[in-house]
Length: 401
Image (cartoon, rainbow, N blue to C red; front, side, top):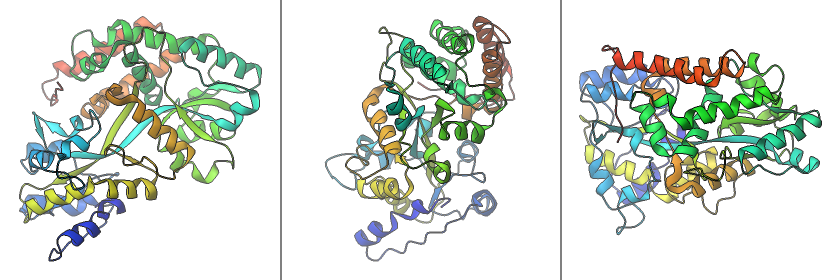
């Protein structure tokens, strides 16, 4: 297990199966420790794979090393025999672990993305959370007049702002906008919703609403600017709270809201980008594969999922597991966005399937926001890069339905 919470199901598992021997081995060196064991045919029954030394799930799938989890999904849930496990998982969260139509991984933790702000700063100035893009532009003007850099982002890592652009586009045009991008379809990046979204973000530059120096900042620099109230809005995932806990001022009121829709015609006005991560795996050659599947069933119980959220300030894919918990303002705002989104939760996978292309798309986005070229040229440049990926026979291609 690459994270301590991977062992949280051991206690309820032992309670249910008194004769069971459950050994949890925490390590940050998964790749070094387990590659040889998988190759030798003696892998552990269950793996939680996260961090810099995470296993490459697609490689394990290609090598036939992972068990199909469909039996787990069809089994009665740990908490309620009348409800199958698959019905406990939030909408769209299983897709990340599907390969060629089969479920080989179950991503357990959900990262929720949005725009972060200080509730204390907003209260001080009498600012309201914007509900539409025009309201966001108006808020930016008020922030600028008050001496606060309205919008900041990590210019050194421009994928952060590309994420927000994609979210805005998907909210406008629906799930198919990002599905077509994932599937490398012709013209996907030139979709009207994509062009409208990048044009909206380019308007921030045009109006001088991007905090000075953002293009040269790394993620810590942009986050620090938010924490010191030198910037009013920052696009980021809900790990921000844990990452900046040591420097977040008391009573700051770190809170997230969803990227506001372009207008009232948006297909998914409650849409929010969510990225399921932290894959749980069961080895195909596990000594006790049924036991491994049942351990994952325990991980998907509300008791264990609630414990994970309470102790790590992370949300899980288990429906309602964080409801009623005493959690921070930041995590509560992310949870509420996720709950409100329902089937409007936005997911995409090209950034993990084609990581180099995603890096290129981020760089082109950063250049566009810096004013290097027009939004329509942004779409053409990224589409050209996507077409190169599609035509490259050395790159393994993936598909989502």
